[in-house]
Image 1 (cartoon, rainbow, N blue to C red):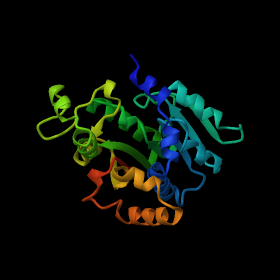
Image 2 (cartoon, rainbow, N blue to C red):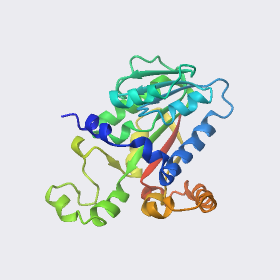
Image 3 (cartoon, one colour):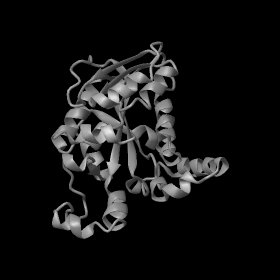
Image 4 (cartoon, rainbow, N blue to C red):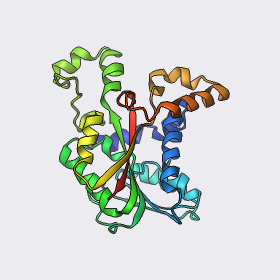
Length: 260
């Protein structure tokens, strides 16, 4: 059974990023994308796991050269439907763990904003990261998004009263790390897990960012904000999203790396 294909046929990822609470993750990611592109003349960008094109299509419509690689055929169809043919975007179906269709060192910015959510072994994660490093030029940037463990423990395990169910299924380790496999769709990590992966590849970390921070704990409140209040929330979020004492509690993080 292809759990991932089935999930994305039903799940409205585009709608999530367009919601007010989803905009926090999107605006934060775009802020750091722009920072990585600053000073780069005519940058070449690849997004691996481009989904429905929320980032790739936006960047291409802004004139950036983009290659969008997406595993799920349904998502790729939705991405292509957003193009009018004038955008400098090439969309291909492919797997984050095998980017052999892409040349070495060709991209100034490589983005993995989804694949690490769905890779369940350390070996598979390192394959994806190694491929991302390979296709990035020396000195170029790699952006890697992760789903974090603690929000799930707080909001799902305890918040939705799933503790005894998950204990029975042996899906919680003694130190409260959630155990995932493909049927659970999402793989959850901690900041130390991310650091351990980074240590295996030729990169230096620029920073680790909490892309939505406290937002998803208060979704209904965020979605009900007026424009002025939301703007202030974004000011607050940007002021704290790089604080190391808060990052592990964010639902999503963005690891910003530079190829050595």
